[in-house]
Length: 210
Image 1 (spheres, one colour):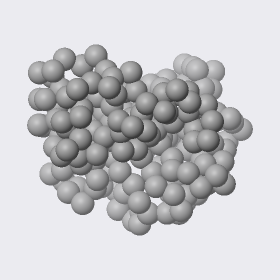
Image 2: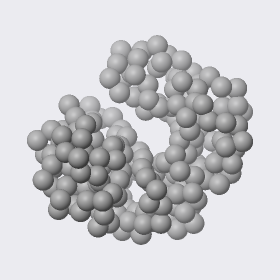
Image 3: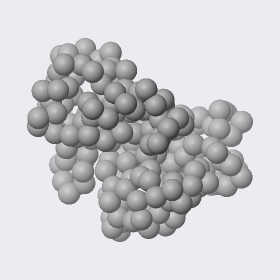
């Protein structure tokens, strides 16, 4: 079923597993749940999320349903499973905090905000200090960039690319904060990541029991 769709979220609820999803900001300040910067792959449309209004995006659909908003995700989940909300900043850093303040204000279920952008996480720390935050890192990030990002973001947890989950620095970092691993896609990756990480973000054959 399509990623980041209401169908996929409903299936996760039925399986009683947590949900990881991607957030983007529309031109008129609404948060939608969508991975790509544009709608070509998922909807067959050239519209870009960041330059389109929510009404414009309403003409496209994912799995037969409208592109979900953060509000519709919250209404569907209702606190039943934990949420990992990955913010895709896409060069639009300064509009995100007002949008997150409004979007997260009334939700009472367990969730965390995570991002590859340490500046966004620093702003979350300053403006939304009660929100749990995670810094995402790719396997090939240089050591200086990595430590600068960790210092700036001051995350509650680190989300590491499964390709780099065996790096020695992570074993030391794990003494201070939990390590999450993304994205586990095979049983072999799961077997390794279960030893070296505290939580796994998975899809396909990376799910438990495979």
